[in-house]
Length: 301
Image 1 (cartoon, rainbow, N blue to C red):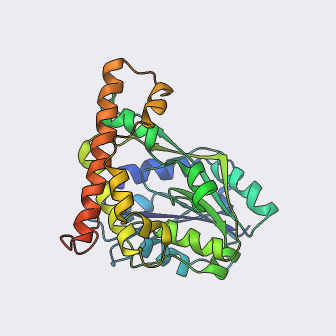
Image 2: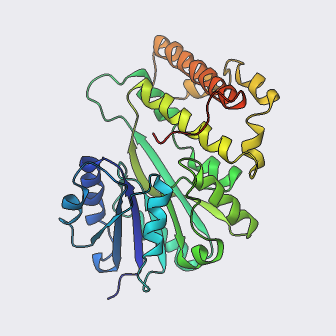
Image 3: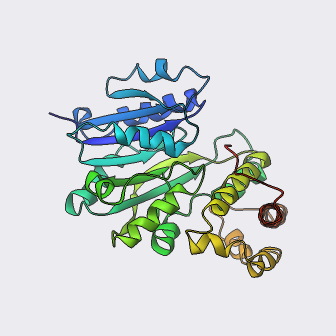
């Protein structure tokens, strides 16, 4: 049996999490003979190749040019001819056992689509979760919203077919962030749907430190600024009306806090609301830095 499903995983210095991800792929409900996992080492200092070589269904690639979209394109350019379906995830994700099988049920019915799967955030640390972790459970990876309202899916959990890649092309390698949004815009132009599938699940650890949240904001704001001339939704973020709205405290978040899946004390709700507000202001401040020319380029973070 020839492999017909490729899973592409870019990685940069995450060898321990990569091993856990590959362990999860080894327990998939589809036959491993169908699976062709491509791990792209984006110039890590970790020994990624040694980790990959432990798995017979995995293949190691190296991409020196920094950026996860460069790494993903490296794999797309080297796909075996037998591959019909392509899945993307990240090294810090844990695919559930029926992840690929559930995605294929959609793609085999209609190859000309993209499937945005469910990214479930879980608390990894022992003991009492931090405020950052509780915030992440609420806010990270709103994949259904992305698929249904913005016509894209994050590459932590995204499936499509080779036919779609052949039609709309691969990712924009000039971007460190926002390449999934830009690719989704091309899907929309080509009238190719992006469908959310809750049963296509991966789990992702909640970020634990404030620094990790601010780093993500810097990366995503940089990606939006770089695409502001091509994508109206990115340009809108840098208009003064959006900046003014950005400094208004996030009152709508109170509704989300009331329905938090882990249950919260009043003190926790107050602290998370404070974090919501701080991060909203931090994002506005970083957009202003770009507008004033104080930030020249987005960072690889």
